Image: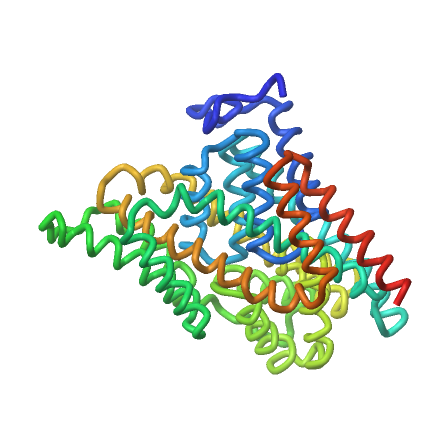
Length: 401
């Protein structure tokens, strides 16, 4: 594109925070598209962002991309959405931050709202299994292609390769993702200190570690029964978005504790249905909150729940933009970030293996995955074509069988 900047350069003035509206528009259009086609969960979202922003457009380098990917693991909330928000900031500053986040979330929120309406009206949701049958194998190939591309950037030596294998094994054995990430970061930083013979801890470390504790004390639960139901819905979702680390299973536990057990607003089955819809629709899994909001209070509830659960991510990323560059400013924190990046890539590989086992189930799905991977290697076709082709094959397969 004619108005694209050099790799890593924001399309605006970094000192003033101002940027050109054409840059904001291209950020908005790109993340609107990604939010519409990003099936497959956070690993798939990350792979698609890497393909679009690094491989196709050159807006950021692979090194910058993995640094942002690692840094977003330091904060609570949906990591792939926070990565989108930070990439938007890198390209078009504060307007880009808002545009990327809103446009990545919006398509999924609208789709989930429509499905929630169908669920409430008809007691079920339209069948999507046939379409997903063809889409998910294509998504697996997209993730695998991104992983191979990032390996050269992240795995810088034999030590990092061993660390990646250990992190992957730990994840597959059931170790909590946060422990895997923390161990990767601290082991690498500790090894650096031992090698250098330093015992001092730089002040630059205090900022990222303090972010890890932002949600740890927990925010108030706001159980006041005299308060408005809409206000209580908003504040409960705001609390969850502020303190939640980890996978969709962690989100499930939080939602069950608040909306099934404490408030009694939905049943356990409705919660399972909500999480299922969040997983099979494109974009962030956190749009599960949109579905629950609709069940509780209709379209207004869906809107308030969506805003509340994603609002902390915008705030945390806004704080993180002040910190990410400083992580590379000293050898110690740079080693910390390197270890975090290795562990994050291993987690991405682990999620992909688990997804692959459930998606590639017969010769046709294997053929979709292999054909997509071959085309990704040889061409620069947009990911939307692979998603569309997979959907068409899945739909045809469902109709024929």
